[in-house]
Amino acid sequence: MNQQEYLVYGYFRQRWKDSRLAGKLNHTLTIKGSDIDNIWIPDPYCYNARESNMMLLDTQLHSKIAVDPNGDVLYSKGVTLLASCTMDLRTFPLDSQSCRLKFGSYGYTTDDITFDWGTTSVTVGNNEMAQFEYVSNNLTSDVDEFSVGNFSTITVTFLFERRLGYYVIQVYLPDIFVVTLSWIVFWMDKTEMGDRMALGITTILTIMFLLGSLNGSMPRVSYPKALDWYLLASFIFVFLSLIECMLVFILTMKYSKSKEPTKHKSITTPPLTKVSSTLQPDPTNTKSSGVKKRDVGELKMTETLKRPSSDQVFPNDLENIGFDGGRSPADSVDKASRVLFPALFVIYNIVYWAVYALPG
Image (cartoon, rainbow, N blue to C red; front, side, top):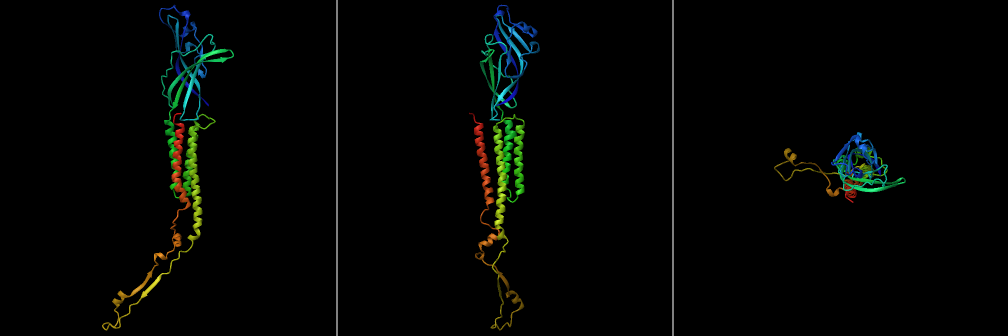
């Protein structure tokens, strides 16, 4: 529990019947200022008020008394109360709070005064607040027992629901964007360890800044709030993405070292086949005693290089060239993280909002 303060401006009205004033008037009499001291009035005060003007003189306040001919007295006073409210912030900022104002007599016991709400009600004139939305109020009456006697009390309890819009815009949405940003490392080059680590560290610092700035303006309580759990879970997701970067880098280095001996081997290819041929003149041809230079240029075959067929290239040669048929362990980790991290974060959000946001 945590004690908070809230300020109340209002009119405190009391009604009672004084038989001594009955039959003395033929119309309703209004009394103000110092003349109120000539009539008996109760002495109520607020139990949980840190500061109050209820005990000040009527000459210092806006107050009046209306006396009816039948002896009914209505006493109205403008009051300012700085009251304490006990809040439970475990579900903050998805919480509802109830704050009360408790009134009772300071010096009169139940033998003299009994406070009761009767048929009256508490009306809230201005229910527009920055962080809370006024829902309703509840009126109760009770008797407090003390060693000096029993004292009648009345209590009004106000129910408020916290407005979530500010925290969605300022905390939840930026936090979701930061966590999503940390997943970019899964698509980055696995050999660029510096860039991946820099992005991971930046997102971690951003989450820590959100957590620190939020709790800096909140009361220091000894239990985690709902928003703390959300930011801590987001911090874990971002931290795990940083761990994934380190794991991928280590797997990449080990995989590279395992391939290093084969990379330095020379790529051997079967020897080239040399084919040459010389065209000889036909001795039976009497029309030509030899081959003309033009014919020699056309028919003389030069050296031809013949490469081996595809069935002569061995699988080891492809591996040495760099065409590895399998996926490296680092690639498998990155590919799994691209699906696993978003899926787990979506599941966590579903559970979080179901636990804290749904009524009951």
